[in-house]
Every structure is written in C-alpha cells, then in structure tokens.
Amino acid sequence: MNRTPPVCQPTASKTETGSQPPEKVLLSCCIVQPMTRSVHSIVFTALLVAAAGAVALPVVAEAPQQRSIDAPQTGPGQAPQLNSEAPRGRWHPDNGTGEIILDDESYYEVFQGERDIDAWRNATGDDVSGTILEGEVGESEGDVLELGSAVPDSQDVGRYAGSDLTVRVQEPEIESVDLYNSIGTELDSMSELRRDEPLLVVADWNFVAAEDLRVELIDRDGDVTIQREVLSTSPTDEQADRLPDGFDEAALARETQGTGTTGYESAYWLFDVEELDEGSYTLRIEGVDDLTAGEAVETIDFTVGTEETGTPTDTETATATDTATATPPETSSSTPTATLPATTETPQGPGTASPSAPTTAPTPSPTTGDDGPGFGFGVTLVAVCIAVLYARHTRR
Image 1 (spheres, helix red, strand yellow):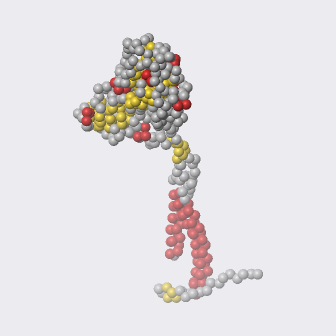
Image 2 (image 1 turned 120 degrees about the vertical axis):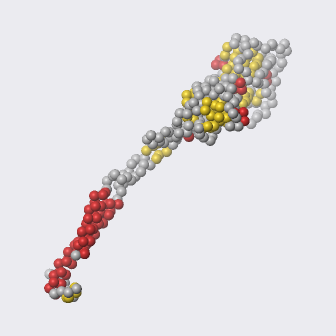
Image 3 (image 1 turned 30 degrees about the vertical axis):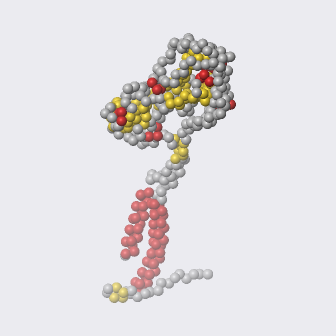
C-alpha cells in the first residue's frame, strides 16, 4: 500500500509589498518545514546531551581511610594541635621526664622540684621554653616562673600566666598511706599487725601525673633495703577485696607503681612480714625520680619482735623525712602482746580504671571531584555554539 506524502497547503502570507505568489509559498512550506523539524530534533538532542555532560560531576568512590581520633590533624605548614595531649601527653611518669604542654586558660599543675623537663609547648605545638610567667594571686603574686628544665624547689605555689600561657605550681605531697591486715581491717599503727600475717599498703599522692611512687623497706640494723625479699603476690581474700577491679595481683610485688607502670592512680604493695628478722625497720614511700623530699616522702618506723610477742612498735613516724634514720630506737624492756583489731570491715575505696587505649574512627573521603571523568568545558562550548546557530537559523 502506497502512502501519499503529505501535501502542503498554500497559505496566504503577506509581506510589506503585498501577497507572495502561490508557487513561492508552496515551495517554502514543502522545503523549510521538513528542515525545521530535523533541526529541532538535532538541536534538542545536542542540547540535552551537552547539558547533561556540563553539569555531570564525576562520581569516583574512594575507600574510607582510617585515622586515629586522638592524633592531631594538620595541613601542610601547620603546627600540630596538642590540646588533646595537654598537659602530660608527652610525659613519662615512670621516670619523671618528657614535655609539658600548656594552654591559655586551664592552669595545668606542675610541682616544686620537678626536673628533666625536655621542653614546654603551647597548644599549637610551639616550643615556648624560656618564657617568663608572672604570679597572679596569693603566694605567687609578684613572683616569676621561667619555663626551664626544672621547677625550683623554692618556687612559690600559686597561679602564673603570660604570653597566652597559664600554669599552677603545687607542692608535691603523699596524701595518705593506709595499712590493712590479713582480714582487710585498716590498722592505726604497725603494732596492731601480727608477725604471721601479710601487710597490704595502699598509698595515694597528688603528683600522679608527674611521677610514679616507689617503696623501700630499710633494715636499719644493717642499713640495707630488703623490699624485694619480702614483697608478695598472695593477698588474702579480704585484702584482695581492697584492690580495684581488674588489678593484677602480680603488681603487688612491684617496687614502682602508678599510671606509668601499673596504670592505676593508687599504689598497692603486699609485704610478707613473716619473712622479716627481728629488728628495726623503716618503710619509706616517695616519688620515683626527683620528688623525694618534704611532703613527697612518707616514712613509717617499726620494730619486729618474736613471733610469740607479736610485732611491737617503739617508733612510728607519720611525718615525712628526707633520709631514713640509721640509728635504731631503744628497745622497750616490756613485751606487749599484739592486739587484733575488730573484724568490722571499712568501705572499700574506689579503684581507678586503667587508661583506655585510643580508638580509631573511619573518615569517609569525598565522593566527588572537579578533575574526574565527565564532559567538561569543551562539550559545553559546543552546545553553546549549536544553540547560537540554531537561533540564527530560526530568525531567517
């Protein structure tokens, strides 16, 4: 079946000079109209493709990268941000050395007598060693503190500030030393301890961030330290209840304890008193490095008698001393019998949890960019050219 092509109907079209001849109208209708339809299709398709290509952004998926949430994020030429590490994130309390980080508002603590300070830094990581800070109020008012390799023993306590830095100087102090017998009862003195039971010693101090603590047991008759021979790892059940959850009992025999060694802010030592010979002894607790004077030291003097007479004490020193007493006190002629304390247990002190390890979190990378695959500028230019030609053609 033959299809008859559409016949253009001549229409009257007037110009400024009058009507066009019918033949010219017919020719214009039959030639221009099909051309216009083709151009429309081509232009529409080209513009659609060009527009899609011009605005399309390359989608380039990248695998997420792992980064530590604790690590300071810096760009090229930027100093690391150390806020998360302030003030002792670069300090080693197990040996009392490292760097101290300060900011302009927190007044982080440092302690009289600290030494081996490798550097002072501000929160942006700049080395500010040598900076002079001025005392603000109280005892420190009018005094100055130089951020050097040590904090002088005689430095006035109080707050200091200057050059967008702040710090608080404190006196180091052992705050408490508690003694517990085999049934977990706190003792007022060593005289209440029987010769045949272990002794649990618990110590707390205010310079935890600066230095760990160490213990010494000094035989004053021979002037030798013997703590290694009598430290034990076998507490009674009642003494074990005095330890924080998760505490490794093997650490009870560690001479040095603290956040740098055991991860706890209290120290726990267990002594097997039965291993001691008769004589006079000094239990000495102090900082592991430089903080070993004044209130940073605690000593307890005691005497061990026979097993039948218990463990009498002639001298118990609660105040801090710088050196152990070498001369034993006179032994009393009496032989008092050790008195067992009441079995009522005192509330267990809270333990300090071990520092958690830094965690990491995935950071998604951007999924779009400007230099990936796509049509880009060239195709956009072609689309514009086609649109211009089309506009010129339609005006003819």
